[in-house]
Amino acid sequence: MIFVLIDLLLLLVWSTQYRWWGRTIDYKHPRILMYHMVSGHRRGAKFNKLRVPPAQFERHVAYLAENGWTFAHVSELKNALPDKTVVLTFDDGYRDNLEYAHPILARYNAKATLYLVEDRFDRDWSTAKKAHHDSGELMQEPKLTDTEVETMLASGVWELGAHTLTHANLPAAEPQLRADEVIQGRTVLQQKFNQSIPSFAYPFGIYDTEDVRLAEQAGYDFAVTTKEGIDPLPYARPLELKRIKVSGKEGLWSFKLRLRTGRRK
Ligand SMILES: [Zn+2]
Image (cartoon, rainbow, N blue to C red; front, side, top):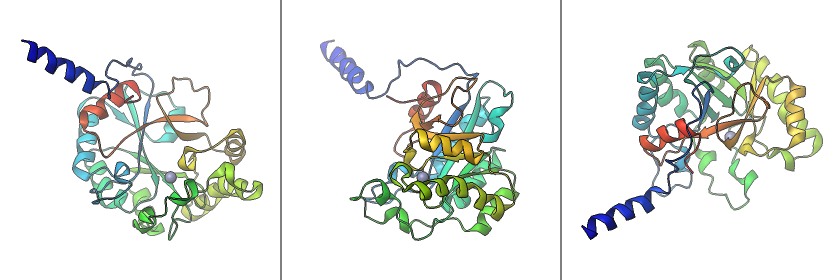
């Protein structure tokens, strides 16, 4: 008996790494999920949290499709939406988004929004956040070509959003460059892909009030951050929306918990 109690106690202690007692956020408030890569983990790699293996990604999409969730693009957040609306977002523009995520999304009639860095080749943007992040891991990760992005947009599955010209650390940039990153980051994509770019994602989720002002000036309807959570409707700050982080290192139980409460911890 005592051993059973000890086991239960250990289980309880272990489970505190998950915030399973967290409050369920009303399902009338849309969930915005944040992904980066959909690919297998690399041995010893630093950024495996950003890599959701394809089979795991399929479990996410299948779970959402089979449990009454409606998929929407970010731009649709200005419409009246059904309860249990989910918005999948993918940051940066990794080629595996087309190779692995796209066929799964298409199979389940799902939708996603792609936050594309305009100048994304041969750039190691992890160093813009922390100088010691110099492994080159994200630089070597294959990126989507413009032609591949066109293919994705033509399918109707994807909507395009901006993620600056160079994945800049905005508050650290010179004023003119900072404005260009946010404002030209929109116009360049508009011209290149011949469509409106309704939303924006702050690189690294690092921004301040000046960047919010620039996002407004640029004409975005919405901007997403990396702050964890679920914003209640109507949005008080549509240019600072929270997202739910999806980790490649967590199972379906965590995914469901985050979907319900907005966060794991
Ligand atoms: Zn990014």
